[in-house]
Every structure is written in structure tokens, then in C-alpha cells.
Image 1 (spheres, one colour):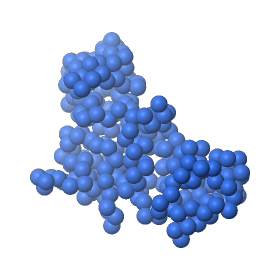
Image 2 (tube, rainbow, N blue to C red):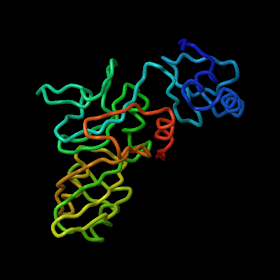
Image 3 (spheres, rainbow, N blue to C red):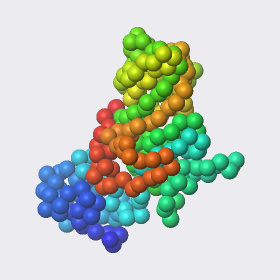
Length: 241
């Protein structure tokens, strides 16, 4: 695709909608280029300009890539580690320079995105856009309903208050419990510190979803490209504050 293309073609190539539907969206004032309403006949430089539909960015630059990775325990959520430990970008087959979208600590596993799309990275990682991350935490001890309620009303950590958008007690065993937490913030080891603050140390922590994006079939250490539909669902899933 040439660098400067008609807006409706860019939207069609990005897999957002057909050219005819894109024309209707432009006429309806739903499409903007760098924040300015687009009109029929406008062209866009896909490498330097931002195209939005209903204020949600559309990725049309063919150079951008976003992969969904299942990060194993022991792998670092960075592009390079001075200590030589394995990194998440090493697990993704790509010729482009990619970066992790947010982080999972070395002792945690689960879904993490790796991308070179700066706008997507900002929207997924910044709390103001409200894109959630879902975790399953296996913790020590028997967790009760009052404790689950505390996780959503808020606990005090050393770097300020923290709370889950939603917390669900999935299972209670003889000496451990399984808790699902839905978070918006992504502070360092936040889920672990929250559970510790209510008296339950985390034994295992798995991120199972990023916004609406999940993939139960993805195995540790493997990855796949996100589709245009998935990217659209992801970016439209938040609740900006």
C-alpha cells in the first residue's frame, strides 16, 4: 500500500469496514485524521498520521505488528536484559523491532502483547483508557467473602491505594484459594502486593485476558499476530476516565 492513500481504502485494507461503509462513516462525521474530521477525497499518510473511527485509532501502517504472547515464568518483560535472561521479544518471530506492551513480572505467566504500535501501547497500558487485564491468582490460605470485598473497595499499598475493578472467588481448597481479579492499573507486582496486604501470599499468577482478548489454546512460549478485528475490539473496549 502506497504511503498516501484515500481514507476509505486505508480503512478497507485495515479490515475495519468496506470502502462503501467507510464512505458512509466519513459523511456521518465518524472519521478523523489527526483529530480533524475527514471528508470524501481525503488521503492519509499511513506512516505519520493517525486515523480514527468514533475516536478509536485504526492501525493502517503496514509496518506495525502486534502479537499476543503467552509469557512463561522466568522470562523478562523487556526487549533487552543486561543480565542475559530470556526476554519476551525473543519468543516472537518477527524481523521488526518490537517492545512489550506493559509487563508481567518474572514469576508470573500468561498473556502479554508485543508490538511496535506506539498508540496501541499507550492505550493498553495507560489507566486513563480503562482497558482491563484479568488475572487468576492461586494464593495461600482460605479466602473469604469479606477479603474479596476488600480487594474491590481498595487496599493501601506503599505507593498508594489500589483496588480491583472486579474480584471473584473461584475456588477454595484445604490450604489455598483461587481468586480472579480484573484490574485497570498495572503497577509493579500490584496483584501480588494487594493479595499480600489482605494476608494471602500469591503462589501462582496467570494473566488470562487483556481487555476482550484471550486465547486458552495459546501455549507457554508461543505467540500469534492479532487480527484487525481483535485490535479494533481491544481499542474500543476501554472506558476512558
